[in-house]
Length: 246
Ligand code: ZN
Image (cartoon, rainbow, N blue to C red; front, top):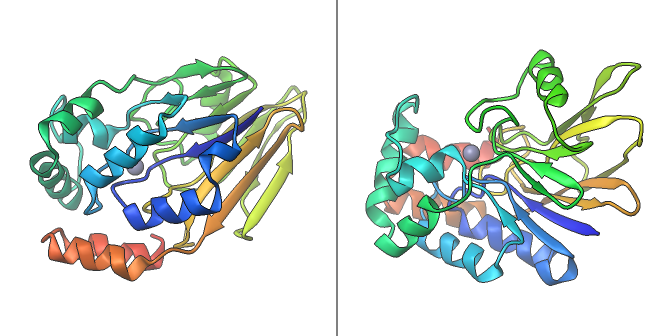
């Protein structure tokens, strides 16, 4: 089975469309969306529509989807994130807000994989440190678990013998073959707001028959996305960071 994995789209239509051109969902057996469909970017309505039309086989909510749909307050958000979440809430039509508010909470098992937004224990937790990755790997329900939330394309494995990172080398495509004696926790990276220093849109492909996972990066029209953020009156920092990948 070949899974297309999209995470942290963040209302960036230009980035999402570039990914969908590079990886048409109909070429895959399953489309998996790991949350944060909206927030930060200037196209929440269009991005919700795009995602809905694609009818993902499995989709979970992210922290920005919760706040932007109005089911949770923006507590713990920094100023720019809070401003963007409130703007997104007010810009979304009631129907699209309701769609986001109904998205399932991770973790969720789907076929051979488990998915979560933050970590298997807590949808809002950030896995940045190896110690947190080890803890999360101990709590996964399947040998391969995908997560998002940090906007960093990275992977970790744990086995009887040890633990290590699998680092995305930032090549256009970086494939790793998964060892069946190890458990994996993999972040495909963010479609719409990468923060790993590579501004290109990120997505993942998992081929369970070959036990292969690949990180992909595609360039997109960053200037167009930035222009929309400025026109919408969203914080300038949200436009700037797209070009930096930070
Ligand atoms: Zn996010």
